Amino acid sequence: MTKAQDILALSGGVGGAKLALGLADILVPGQLHVVANTGDDFRHLGLHISPDIDTLLYTLSERANPVQGWGLEGETWNTMAALEQLGAETWFRLGDRDMATHLWRTQRLHAGLRLSACTAELATRLGVASHVYPMTDDQVSTTVHSDRGDLPFQHYFVRHQCEPVVTGFSFDGISAAHPNRELMRLLQRKAFGTIVICPSNPFVSVDPILQLPGLWLALRESPAPVVVVSPIVAGLAIKGPAAKMMAELGMEVSALEVARHYCRRYPGLMDRFVIDDSDATMAGAIRDLGVDVAVTSTVMKSRADKQALARFVLQRDGG
Ligand code: FO1
Image (cartoon, rainbow, N blue to C red):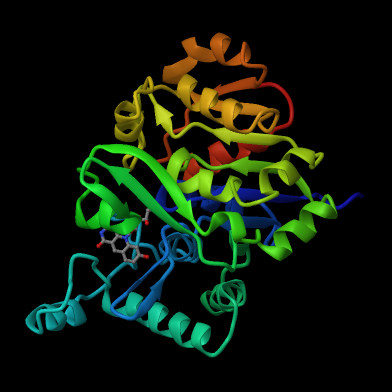
């Protein structure tokens, strides 16, 4: 019997982590590899915060707060309350137990460990069998250009609650950054059977990963089919500001427009685009872009929904 090939998923935070959990559930432990966006990383209160890595690790270890999607379940907020009393910045909320992750990571980075090594160690300690990689060990920071000026990503997202009108994005440091070494080695070895681009925000979660020098071309050259799951369903984003961003950028808010975005920016990368049943009428127009289309229910409310979408995404024919 030939060994089933490993699966690679590219993910941002909450939406991507849901599909990653579904994939991990239906695969053999260790068969899933997830590359996390680190453009959202920043220093806050002296700590190195890697929100998407943590959302993935907390979700995959079944510790995530189910309401927020980020942070830990059953969290307490005593440190935040004490910081507030001291007049410190509290717009970015760090729970007491979550704080331990940031303290630990900051200390390990200070000691000279790379972010990828910290992430692997954290995954082991949390009992996560899947491999989780930061997209790069170098610093890449997403800036949101907006009607209120250029904003570091977390200032746009959390401090200003995504209210500013966006005009564009830049990923500072990206041209000098190296994609994750282990990922590039695995791609060279043709280790993956399927590459999944999770239903994450195309502009601020997936683009920073794909725009790392050499990365999207290495994915395109890989023999594995690249399957993208639309984050837009019936003209709305399941979570987060993707739909609002599209409208502000003068784009049509639709799954079709997301497909156009990937085809325009990364020609020849996408083999299959997965859309929700409610967008089935767009299938023909998406096929006209030269990609295969598969239609299913993409809204992941329950654990069974996550597993069903994961199974659907990994099927090789039909749809
Ligand atoms: N998101 C919020 O909306 N408000 C917060 O206060 C907040 C704190 C936070 C702390 C740690 C962490 O890992 C994530 C946190 N997030 C928070 C989520 C995060 O900022 C975003 O979901 C991602 O950056 C977008 O993918």
